[in-house]
Amino acid sequence: MAEIVVHSGSDMVGKKLGDSGLDERDITVLTLHRGPQVIPNPRNKTVLEGEDRLLCFGKLEEMRSMIPDRKQKRVRRLMKKHLPENS
Image 1 (cartoon, helix red, strand yellow):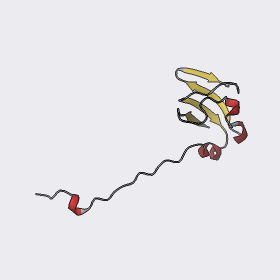
Image 2 (cartoon, one colour):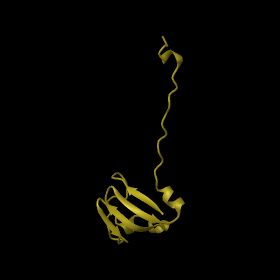
Image 3 (tube, rainbow, N blue to C red):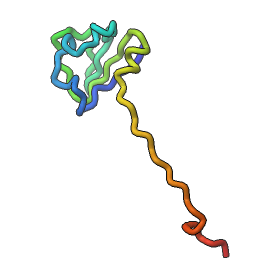
Image 4 (cartoon, rainbow, N blue to C red):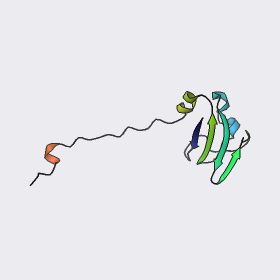
C-alpha cells in the first residue's frame, strides 16, 4: 500500500481515474482524499484534481516508478580562502 499525491503539475490532473493508467499498472485506488473529503472506492469516472491523495494497493515497484526523479543538490566545497580566519 502507498499514498500517491497528484500534484498540480501532474499529467493526471483533469483525467478520469479510469483513464489515468493505474489499472494497466495493476494499481487499485482504495480511497481518494480531496481536502477534508474522503471518497472510498472512487469510481473510474471520477476526475482527478491537483493535490488529490490516492491510497493505493498494488506492486510497490509500479508505484515507485510513478514518482519523478528528484534533482540532486549540488554541494560546493568551500575553499580555504573563503573561510573566515580565526582570531
